[in-house]
Every structure is written in C-alpha cells, then in structure tokens.
Length: 104
Image (cartoon, rainbow, N blue to C red):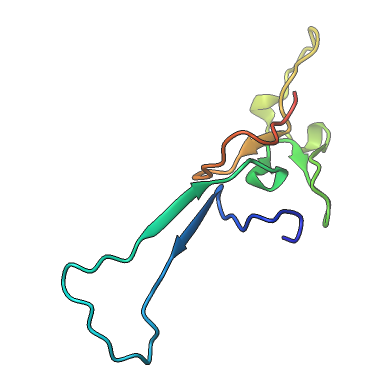
C-alpha cells in the first residue's frame, strides 16, 4: 500500500521460494523449501467498518451513517442513555497482532 515497509496480507507476511518454471532440476524427495510466516502489526486496513458505519472512497476512517444504516433490530425504540461501540471490526481471518487498535 506504500504506507508501510512490510508487505502483509490479512496480518501476515509469508515468504517462500519456488522452482523457476523453465528449469530442469531435481532436488530429491527429501528437499524442503522453507516457508517463513511472520505476523504483522495491525493497521486500519486490517479492520472493516462495523454495522451502521461506512468509509468514504479513499478514506480509512469509519463514520457513523445514522439510524438509517442500522437494521431495525439494532435501533432501540426508546433511548435510555448512551451506547458506546467501536466503528471497526477485525476482518475475518486476519492474524495481525499489536499495532493500531480501534477506540470506542
């Protein structure tokens, strides 16, 4: 994305080697190509907007879309105070650790 030096997808960076397609080589049955997996620090891209929030094109911030964006089961009929929620939820399958965390 150009923001970070790390090249991560779903919170991890996987490095592996593979044989060049046109090479004619034999490495033996017991030859193993190492696969290195490294967890990345969380960023806003590792989070999606939760129900009732949306992002504008080119923005990373989730903004409240108003009661029209909320399913009826989430909209209380009578307001009895305040409700604090996070505008973000972690993308399913994302394995990032630490880094950016959303605030309620």
